[in-house]
Image (tube, rainbow, N blue to C red; front, side, top):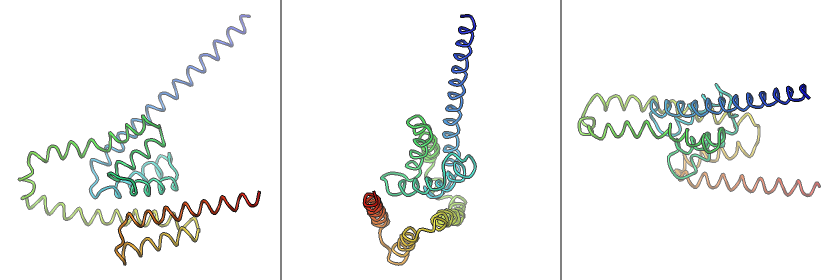
Length: 212
């Protein structure tokens, strides 16, 4: 009886220790989500595409919390959804990692820096708007932002190319031509690509049912 009670106590301690470890790990993930999005949002110029690139490098390449295909899907969903791309991406990444608490931490980290910075700038807008040094700095940043966006496009494009799926490569090429050559609205391109993806999945399910 004493042995049973001792074993029961040991099991209870193990379960309690495991729960504490999971709680600590969860808090660590939430802190990382908040501070990563806060840092990226505070020191990134150029909008959502640049932020998505930096999120990919952190969560995919460095931490390995999200795989490359998921990040590619998140980028597409963030762009095609209403609202700011950076906030949409933060919502998707946060929900993937820790559901509602993760989403709240990621979004808070993403929106706090611009809210604080723009709030401060609004007090001195006239001085900033006419300052030649500020204008020169912003023009210099534009070149750097263009390079980062190009890096993101190449990185995501290579991911699609590695899959060796002809339909995906066709969609990528057609989307580029539609946007770059024919100046088609991005919304229509995303909707068309989504429709092709749905049709592809329906066709795949139909073939699978026939084989069964």
